[in-house]
Length: 233
Image (cartoon, helix red, strand yellow):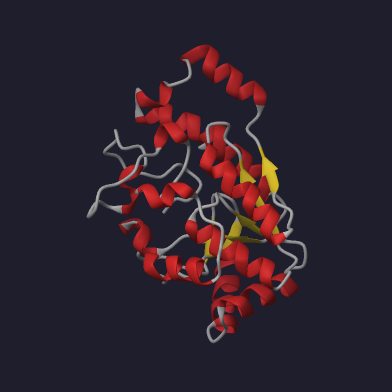
């Protein structure tokens, strides 16, 4: 059934613009369409598109408790500019307390398993709560962000979360994202001007050098497949 839905959506929206597809989804799946933002460049473009047409799409974010101040700053500026609501989900207090009491505040540096444990508590578990009961999950994934995302389609079924994902900026380049931000005066995280391309938690993110892979700044001490569990690709 999920494959049929994906194919139907791909067929119905193949000639639609991003704005038209967002409006179609908001109407077709009333109150069941959500967009997750981490306030990166791609997410800011999508937020601007949703706000521009005042679409009934729920925007939410995950506050892991270890974000950069610059991320909170752009969060605040986004609320002020677009006059929208952004629902915030936090990790369960008990789970965070248990992790720190057992392994300390920086256990994620010690092994991939520890890092994934921290990601699960701070990101995956809250995301599961945020997606529950919804049918369409809008993301800011782009194909050029990593080799693992090259084979994504505009619509995908995410079996882990049992939801249809829509990736509206999938074929956009980073230059196109930046142009939209500049042309439309979209609030942007100040760290993007300092070499940070992919921005997550402060301890797990660094700026990248020219020519480095976009994801090189995430968990830079690891050589593993660099995903946190929110997206399998």
